[in-house]
Image (tube, rainbow, N blue to C red):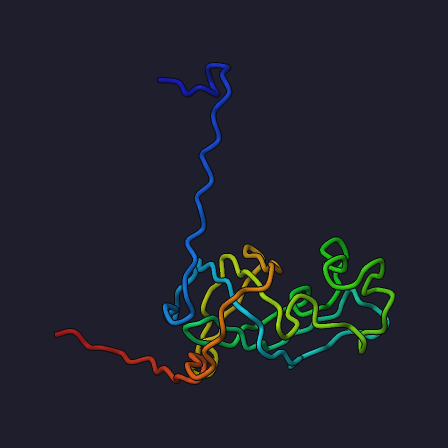
Length: 173
């Protein structure tokens, strides 16, 4: 039996699924594919290396504390997410009007989308383990989008990144 495409017909595209938003307190170690709406509480640059004269080869990593009404977690923002301009993937229009990061010296780069107080949607986020604690990250298959300000207040007492996990080998008999 031939498919529609082989018979000369046009195959219908599968319908896009609606994203299922999860809360911060539902995150578990080693999981991925999460979609979250969170507020940025704090952001600091932990690594910035590369040539000062060339923004194209610069690597920037920022650790941002993000959260919702159920808790907080540390989000690791990389390059464009942290405000490092890369050719063809620049988010300048969301942060600076009519000015590209390439026109600024690297010391004056804003933190991109991860400004404290901003509300962002993290799509296809995953949980990475770093020194026994959970970190939220979005890789090249995910997306970080700035959205309208959320109405919830962040519960800062429940920081999931402060919980230390240990890998235990279980011997089955």
